[in-house]
Image 1 (cartoon, rainbow, N blue to C red):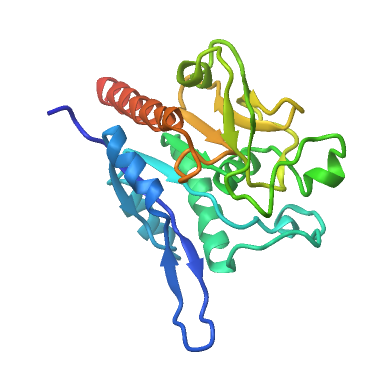
Image 2: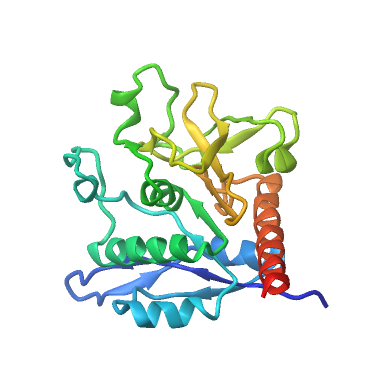
Length: 248
């Protein structure tokens, strides 16, 4: 049996609400896709101590940053747009620390939705806060009546996204109102919607395997071919960790 990398996953956080206690929650698609791709998923709660986070990451081979509600733009020096649906403060505080440490360690990482946006922000990129205002000619990227709303995807030749989708017609699920504006240094756009909105990024650094998708390949509305993104992620984690062992 080939070696199975252990992949950490963060989780969404729900605060106390009337009689309901606070709890963490994670859509099964995230860990099911990691399992199917040959990894072992390990859910990490919102830790507060850096030493505890380091102890956990020492035991992991890669990390999957999940999607969710919006990051607070005020933490990056921008005003709070009225359409922003903030994720829980406890989750966002942890996620930002988590991403910072992942970047410092150059740990293999994949971000989905808000996870990709966080990856881009942490590494020096920026976001559009509301596509329909910032890019008025853009296609609809979120249909409130249809969570499975899909639009076309154009992939960049020679990228991981091209290995997944090839050169045929591609459509992916779309459920976001924020999007990448400036791409972080060290990253390249490797897939976008027909209107130019960024839908995937990949690191171009030799010492760090890092990818992100704005669409959700783990969701029920994803297609079977979308799952190949997780296979590529696990392959990248294996290759990165093998290179580290050989260099040690």
